[in-house]
Amino acid sequence: MSGKGIPVIDLDPLISNAPGGLEAVAEDIGHAAREIGFFYVKNHGIDDELIKRTFAAARDLFSQSDDFKMDLTKGFFETNRGYVPMEGENLDPTKPSDLKEAFNIGLDLAADDPRILNGESFRAVNQWPALHGWREGVLEYFDSAWDLGCKMHKAIAVDLGEAPDFFEDKLDAPLATLRLLHYPPQPENAKSGQIGAGEHTDYGNITILLSDSVGGLEVRRRDGVWLKAPKIDGTFVCNIGDCLMRWSNDVYVSTPHRVINSSGLERYSIAFFLDPNPDAIVSCLRGCLAGGGSPKYPPVSGADYLKSRLDASYAKPRAKTG
Figure 1: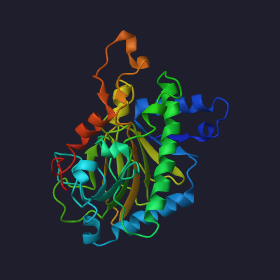
Figure 2: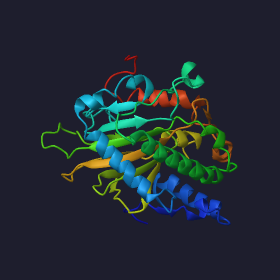
Figure 3: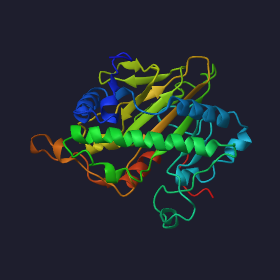
Figure 4: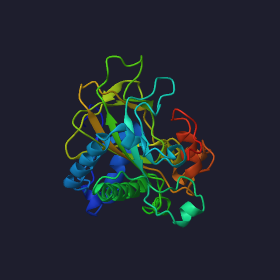
């Protein structure tokens, strides 16, 4: 165990297709998903140089002028793409707005893609900053994180009693979001209760998070105790989201967490949220009905579920913004 109660899972048996590796990793992820909903993963297969370049891209973007960044907000509340300014999001609606800025990228589609022309939910052209090589590098990371998430879903499917490929056709065109985040040092004049990211759970299936050495992520155990989740070199922090909790009929737990940047330093993190395809039907898996019980939630499409969660998170309602 590490991270004061957050397990570290070795993905090498899964990534390398070792005999019995899928089942071993499935057991490890399943245990963590039922107990605390968070885990670190090591030997994940994503190149360290790519990780360094993506952090550099985040620092480059957030160092630009406010005018430069605000030009990337067009249509955000309609598309979930582009820039979110400081205090532009409120993950805990009972507290003041979050002390962070962010930039969202989704599945990269051309303007004439039929999914966009037909008005499919949350399909949009990404907004790209005019920074040399930025788009190509960030997309490389998006694709690598997506691939890793799909591999972990093979183990998740096995743990929940499904075939390894159960999620394959539900994650092949996902409503995934790559989010670059910048947290300033916690200011002395912050409003009462205002922190970097308010207490919340994530919306999708699984989150794959990279943070720098500054720290600040905290995870709330089921007994209410908050655990710090320090950076462990060579790992990602992963957590179960509400959508996968729903699919598992609450067998898996989506755990509240928050960010408090009390370090006095700038903090950067890179989060990949793997949400299912918009038309994927999220409904109780057969193996998650204990003793012939009933599903706790009605079926819902991936798009409708994501919309219901995003609508509550921003400072103003989702509406056309041009």
